[in-house]
Image 1 (spheres, rainbow, N blue to C red):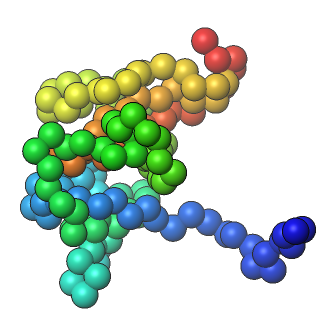
Image 2: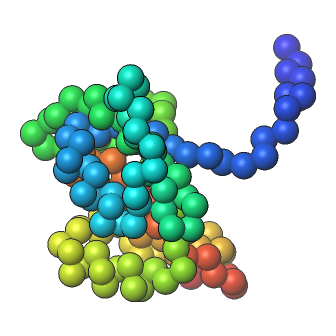
Image 3: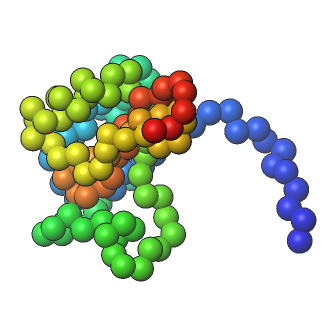
Length: 142
């Protein structure tokens, strides 16, 4: 089978949907990161949140609450296919790292270089969803 190219061009990335179990808790967490609710979709149990620079996420409010915020895609021994995390670009990773520490948000990995163009750190939201934050850099990976 020879797949043909799509006749439609992909022009931009619009958003990622992040399933959460507690609307109020998730909203507070993502608002602290700088996102503001810009639309609500009650029929779909979701909303849209926007950063001041136009980065868009959707929170989906129908997640089952688990006691330990177990992430089935990353924490289980069998690695199932699926989206594991969104990755955001920030202008000052060190400032973010300091703020995360002040807020008591645990950095689960990094900061460290990933390839030649980024330094990354990872955190988890209250439901165990992984978020990656990158600062783009020039030069070789270390």
